[in-house]
Image (cartoon, rainbow, N blue to C red; front, side, top):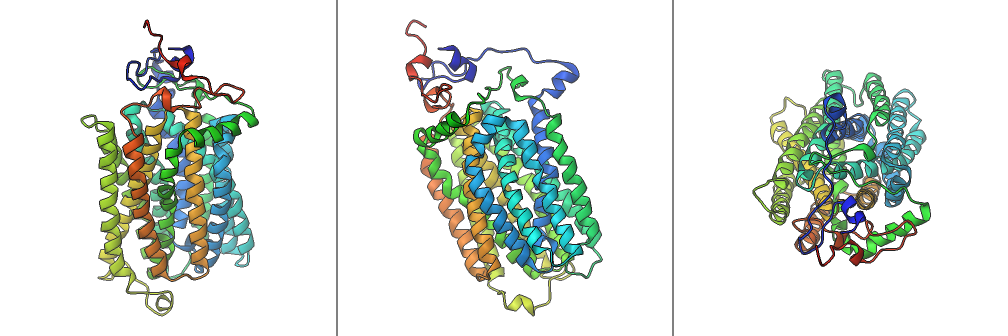
Length: 484
């Protein structure tokens, strides 16, 4: 096999040369701890803990903690609109600038957005600033999540991807847990409809800390996986070559398009869960507690399905189908349950009905539903990342896949947040959420059947075979010689 194939760690479809990379000796002591993939994915999780994790805690309060959710819905619509556009090309930006710089630039938008909510709490007519900050955050989030996906799926070996996704998702969602805990503590005795300035100031300080963490992370070129193999190095090509690579990914691996409905569904359900359920029928104390249990349950959901997807006793294809089946069952459990609550209220009725408090008898079943919503969210996102990781080991290609994921995801979220802002009936939003989740699973099924293999092979990796000028080298250059 050629040196290029060895460097990338791929074999061919006949299985005769499943990863034959040079096995390197990992550093020991403090240096070994620092360059350990588990340490780096934990630091990556901390970046998202401090930035999107706290953003999720804020958004999960319903209306961003504001009395009038319309401004929050419009800000989210602007955020996800710019997110959708820029995420499609963010993989190319990541591959040119490198993951650490891309991650740093992406994290910078979160303090601005939190600060905009603080300004609105002080000056109620600052809604335009909130919407503008949302649009800027969309650009930054596209960069952050693309870099995150590329690193998270490149650090582990093929057998560890579910575990690493689970670790990342657990740490990331601790941001939501901490943020929700702060909010609950500050608002437990509140009778107001909005959160306090102190909550926003606390979130602002933590997001500023998150912006600094990428500067402390290891250079991916110096990373060695736990099995002694080196991470494939990004080429850092020209912009022209990188955009050619984006086209190459879509043309040579069209199975990714079958995951697009699943991508679309992955943030679609937040509108109903956060604004039309948590933000509509509960008071601020109940909303804060709901927010806490939602993000806590995400930790268990991500780790649980991650262990299933990495179960060594099962083949990778069996694990893929098993994960799909778990998601299918969870979608129907959550939405059949939620339907019986949703049919009890409308946009008009919530204006006159008393808000549900944590001491009301009807609160118990509803908080348990929200726990299951959190479990489903984490399982869905973890499974999507795992499916993309099963299609490739190349960080450049994974960056493009993650960009597609976040672009499609955000386009759907932008549309539905805007639909919520203009007053589409709750039941319509709920029904579209349920239908899209089912459609996403049905479209993904043939991709799993046709594309998920026991090992990722060089035959499927056109980007690995693309030279600096953008030309794809013949497969024969990467196959073992007949005499070997």
